[in-house]
Amino acid sequence: MSVFSQSQLYPLESSPCPEVTSAGSGRMSSFLDKWLWHHEYWLPPGITWKDMEDSDHDRYPRPRDLFISIPYAFVFIAVRYLFERLIALPLSKQMGVKEKPRRKASPKPTLEKVYTSQSTCPKENELLALSKQCDLSVQELKVWFRHRRNQDRPSISQKFCEASWRFAFYLLAFVAGLCVLLDKPWFWDQKECWKGYPQQVLLPSQYWYYMIELAFYWSLLFRVSWDVKRKDFKEQIIHHIATIFLIGFSYCANYIRVGTLVMLVHDASDYIMECAKMLNYAGWRRSCDVLFAVFAVVFLITRLIIFPNVVIYTTFYHSMEIFQPFFGYYFFNILLMVLQLLHIFWAYLILRMVAKFIFLGKIDKDERSDDEESDGTEEEEEDERMETKSASSNHNGVLNNMTNGMKGKSNERNKLPKAR
Image (cartoon, rainbow, N blue to C red; front, side, top):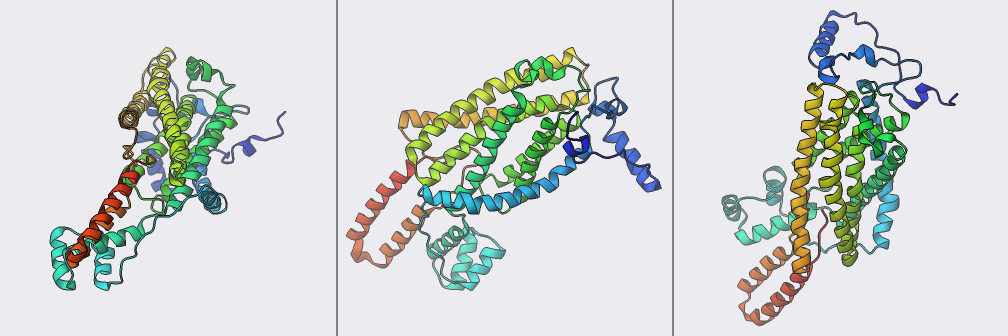
């Protein structure tokens, strides 16, 4: 007999919901049962929610289990705060992470008001109006706004700490996923994913694997406004919401076995990518290049070979040997196909980077969707040199030498590979 009770393994274990006494609540419950929780949407033909009720020894996934991931998300946020300050930040100093020098914008209340309340990058006509108002040239205004934007950009140490946190989680999640799945028959034979479906008992290891992954993505969504802003900020939010939705749907429909395979396949390359980011921020160029090549190989194998030929194939064909198609079957497979289209798009961008690396010997920039915004330091220096040149024509020779020197440094910096 196990030393753990069922309530200890599943914290949200509770008695069935009490009867609804309120007329309004009753109507709402009836509406949800008809349009949201109707068994024909979630379960194969001939199976109802009564067939999925727990017994003394067997337990099945229930939608209310997902609520436990919300408080766990805040636990992740607290752990991340401590991890970044106690582990990641000292590690960044040990690895030689250096901050780029940034010039602060001079105090100008009028421009500051425009920056904070109207636009951080005013258009040409707005710059002309500000030029008359502040008695500054358009070029000086451009330099001021660029300096001001640079002040708000995250530091390299902050980027390193964020990448370190994601690396730590994805690595632990991948190892935990292997521990959960290696001894399971459906890991080696995907037909086992559908044996007895949907009345497949929920194991404690599967429950916690799902809850931890779901809580992590909730924490990313809650923290997205404070994390490093990238060009695909909106896409990040959509991605986090879509991931949460996919995990939740697969749990409610008891696609647990396939769901664990999907999470494992994705975690297999994510931690390599985050490690490459860390090396890039630390200036370890050669190691970053090698790890990027490893990431590209793992990504292409897991996302373009294993995912479609193992995961999608079993959901399309093997599942039909057990039950007839229903709404959940079509919906889940459509989501997997959308995910595969994203994989193909990302693989195309990665292969472009690999081609540049092979034929040109460098990676000018990251083509991935979450490429980080450049600090624009070279543009700032070029603008300032132009201003100095127009104000002091007697130093043309010196300025030309400075320009040539800065161009050489800029070309060297352009050769440095950037993280995803």
